[in-house]
Length: 240
Ligand code: ADE
Image 1 (cartoon, rainbow, N blue to C red):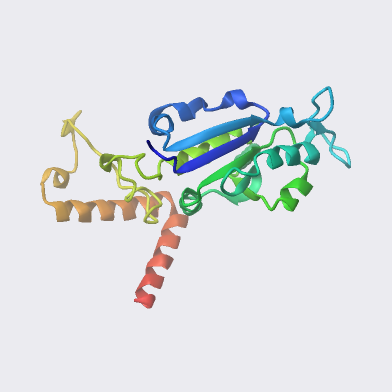
Image 2: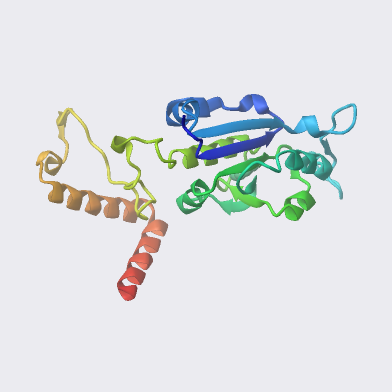
C-alpha cells in the first residue's frame, strides 16, 4: 500500500471543477496511485442561512461580491485536521516560482482557498495567517485554475511521480537557467540538421553544449533570470 506523500484540500464554490485537468497525465496517474490525495469541499455547505448565502456587497461600495469571513472561517475550521499551510490564491499574493513549489512539496500537504467574485474578506485571511499566492500578474475569474497550477507543479516533484526518464533535476529554474533546446529524430528534417554534437555519443561534450545553450537561451529570452543567475554564480564563487 502506498502511503500518500501529499494531501491537497481545496475549498471552493465550484467543486465540480476538480480534479479536472489534474485527472490526466502525471498528476492523474499519481493521484490514482495515491501518491497524493485530493479532497474538495463546497464553501456553500458552510453557509448558515436557508438561502446558503456565502457572499455580500463590499463594505464601502463597489462592484462585485465578497466572500463572508464567517462562512470561510467555518470551512477552514472543518478542515482543521488537514495537513500543511493554508493558502489563499489571489493576484495580490507572492508570485509562485520553483523555489516556492519546492518548499510546498516538502510539506505534508496544503489547504487551498479559492476565491471568486471580488475576493474574500481580509479579516479571515489575516486572522488565520494564510499564505497568499499569485500565479502571475493577470486576473483569473477565480482561484481554482491557480490552485490547480500550484498542485500540478508540486505533485510532479513528489517521490515516485516522475520516472528517471522524466527527471526534473535539469528542469528550467531548478538550476536558475531555462532549459536548453531539445531535438529528436529525424536527424535531418526539412533540410535542417539537429546539432551534430548531440549524436556524437560524447557525454561530456553533450553536457557542455547543453549548458552553453541553456545560458545563451536564458540570456536572450529572460535577461531578468540571467542577471539573477550571474549574481548567484558570483556569490557561489565568493563563498567558495
Ligand atoms: N485569482 C484571480 N487571479 C489570480 C492569480 N493571478 N493568481 C492567483 N489567484 C488568482
